[in-house]
Amino acid sequence: MKTNIILSGVGGQGILTIAAVLDAAALSENLFIKQSEVHGMSQRGGAVQSHVRISDKEVYSDLIPEGKADLILSVEPMELLRYIPFLNKNGWLVTDSNPFINTTNYPEKQDLYEQIKKYPYHVIIDATDIAKKIGNSKVANMVLLGAASNIIPLSEDSLLNAIRSLFKHKSDKIVNLNLEAFFEGKKIAKEFTDLTVNK
Image (cartoon, rainbow, N blue to C red; front, side, top):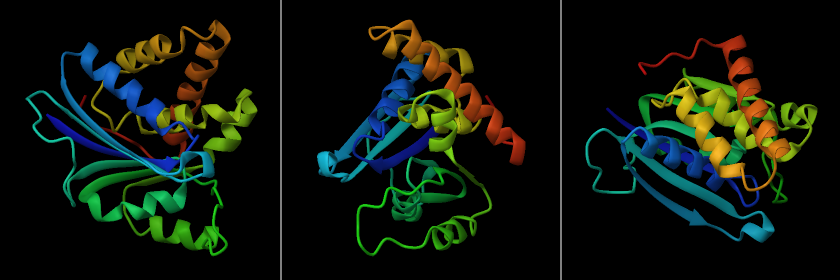
């Protein structure tokens, strides 16, 4: 088993938090994991991306080659499209529909969606709006992780325990908010596509 995941977004959207959850969940299942990350000018909404490689055998490189990503999970639609060359032919695209407009020539949203919909395996959800309804827009990243969870070869228990562990130093309220976001994302994704993967 080997799964290659690219996480993308802009600074402050919680990309590295998703990576931390995946790392902790994989380690709890005694899997090998390699991760690399690139930080843009995060204070100004610069690009942030992370490569996460999970395997039951040793992983020697932390970088995913082009055409080898099984999943691109993005908290921003334009950032998702930057990494399309990395997607394999059966790979999944999961993104928030909400744009983070940090440039004057940002494309029209519908144009972005049409580009994403050219790929057969895609999930576009308004994770930011779902997160706001739960109570905090900052948990949009956990909504997206929940939406992608059936694609990721890690058990739900491992992912949930990793979320609890990561946020336990804050408060029970924050832990529960992130767990609720995860479950809501998982539920929403199931409503418009049957995401299945061999666990």
